[in-house]
Image (tube, rainbow, N blue to C red; front, top):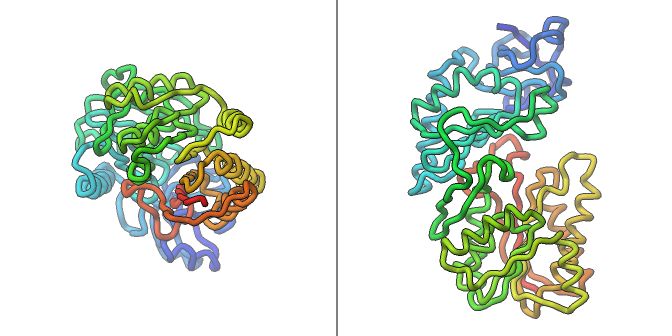
Length: 392
């Protein structure tokens, strides 16, 4: 196995448990520079003492991801079986149904791998060359533990481009229906696992959807970027007077419509296919208001260089949402941009609310649900922010 040596000043950061090793932290040699991307490496300190095991991609700035801080461990099928078993045990303690994120990358000590479970269907997503090359080890271990009927690879994330991996979607095992039922507390949804966003569903917002459902009884609700009805149906099940769901995707809204029937709330819901900004500006023009406004946009900041423009986008969205939130209403907003810190997002959102001439009080803040654990040494794993405001 190839070895890489950390620079003296980088050992301290490694000892804190950070599973990311950037190229500048390594004393790169001609051997490591020309090594095959994704290969296993032993990680050594500046005195060549073993520290752990990872996989290396010398073509990336983020060159090495740590698989284990135990330098003598063997990376084999048993290694992955142990990690999957631990992840499964944690989720079974949290949820009484087999609908959850089973593996959350570094936070489950499996960097570059995400696995979502939908009953006897599992969706796997690999984002690194290292985890792709380890598939002959981890896939049999996963199959042995879960014995799924269907396995889907949603390997179409942008991160794969940086690893020089193809973006593709494939069915490894079984058959995939056009859409499946997703069970979430007292709510049922439909998800398209082959063409839906990410892995087909957003488990990370589960607890936030439940929170919203407790705010809306007898109130009118606007659900922006509704996708296939996550927050909108939660609001309808929370006995809202009426829910308006807005999304630019006809497919997403069609699944939301089907789900309203599944939950017997179709009479409470309306659907509008439109750009969220365009619809909000129309509402402002027509002086149309709602008691509760929920906005869950896609990431505005996908790269660090877009932080300032992205924060301005959140400010503008907050301004428009506050403008259509009724007197003593509630405005909720979520961000999945890990480049936006909670502090910077909160500041931008509150500037937008103030520009709309509204006074506000932050009544709730949260992150992703418990099946998306946060890695103690990796702030990027705390990517989701959810803020709720009472507007005067």
